[in-house]
Length: 425
Ligand code: AMP
Ligand code: GLY
Image (cartoon, rainbow, N blue to C red; front, side):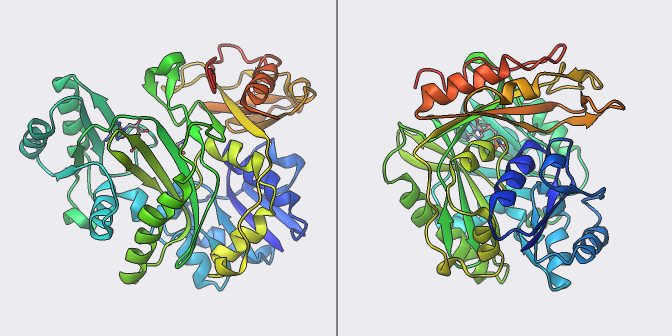
């Protein structure tokens, strides 16, 4: 199987590692990749939002399967172009990617499919926002309808802060068809309880859940500071109910897959269910239409089945033919090392050292994200989240100890990381 993997983050580095390990993989190209993926795959320069360029790249390597990592190319319709060229592609069509691209659309689909989620109002004016905030009360949850790279959601009890975010979102240009193209914000009830990320592989008809993980979204220890793309994760979740995966498949993923099929826009790819375990039961916080970052780093560290086979089956409507994935009994913890300034504007070009030393620790591997190669082959920081250090161990304390032993070997001037990932478990 010849595979083209699109993306350049630590999520794609984790996917590349797992795909390279699949005995069926005869060639793996990561485009554009990062210095970390060079060791395991061929790398190709590519504008991943350019549909024709992606198709050309897939044709040039005679790809059997294209796997799209990040959301932007999905929302741009890259999958449609690859499929139109007759090449199997793991990821949703542009229409199906609206489940992530528009929170108002996701709410509409959830309502139609009777999926448990926060009560919400889709607002296209500040008057509607005020009315919805009054209806739900504080804390206020205000969400940009469209993609916002992790900066779209504000949860606050400060009325002025909530209104300012709503005004900023409404001042943007354009919106989803669900609001007739008008910019929109979703105001919703506040959900309490721990959050869970569960990835469901979908082939348009069937669903296979992976193992759940928990993400740490805030920058600082004890969930202080701003929201980020994610500062760490762990899996498994010893506190999660035994039946969680079945409940999510039956009450969330399958109803959504059926609803999307009924609309003539079948969902293929990962339905990432962001869930809250509230005192009143399970609720969907949001959908993403791709693997999560950094949760993928820990979920794939525990996967014992060949990943390529699973993704190919999903891409070609054949999930019913593959058996449920097998999982290692090991636990995995990842800690993100971020650049100075993240999640704001970051300093770039600092040398990152100690990666080999970190990987020499028991159970540690290092996945690269915002990195670039320097002239003398050194690794330089080149983005917000620079590395994901992954620790694998017999249980969560052992995996956590490994991850932090690895982080302790990494040197990057001004870097930031949380010290409480998977603590107290
Ligand atoms: P999202 O981009 O929708 O995942 O939202 C980012 C984060 O905001 C989530 O991971 C939650 O921590 C928080 N959040 C989103 N919606 C709600 C809600 N209805 N109630 C409480 N917190 C929320
Ligand atoms: N870790 C959250 C996300 O991938 O959206």
